[in-house]
Length: 243
Image (cartoon, rainbow, N blue to C red; front, side, top):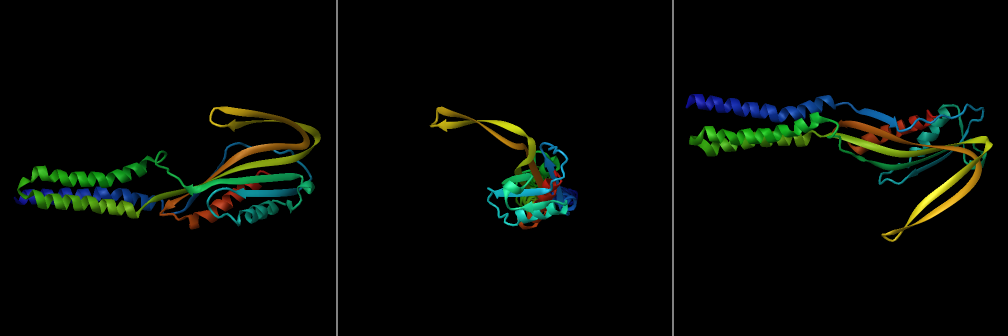
């Protein structure tokens, strides 16, 4: 009997350790805010002595980004450019739209987070499994085992690896001395089974380039209020560095 009790204590202790290790590992590895910004395509602008920029910053996400244009303007000015309010007087146009700024799942790219979640479930299963060994005190042992699993689940619930992602489409136009001809083609839906094709041709004096900027902020128990300023700063820096 004494041996069985000792084995039960050892198994429960192991269960608690296993169920809590995922949460502890997450808390340690993700205690500091990590920020990463990537651009889908490189934009090469021709060297020019003109240093005037017109900004048009939009936000179609559900988050407040009212200070974003100011940050981008400051970053552009820090590069030695003048921000103007008239597009006709600007050599460069920078147009950007924040498509989405929200919490996004990183489980597919971070397998260690999956293992952390599995820890609590394994704890509950191990606790219930003790019943098969110690049938003389099945009720008490099952209760202890499930309690151990619930402790692990509670620990995992308190420690969450959170990643916020901001996705921004960017278009930059630069003036050129040559005449630029642009052919536009648009397919407009007509009901559920048809489409209308629209084509147009225009001439101008601008070359236009498009890219997408993806910024990530990752930290344990991260709130958007903490992620927002660094995401905005990263986007502003990335856009300004194109110039």
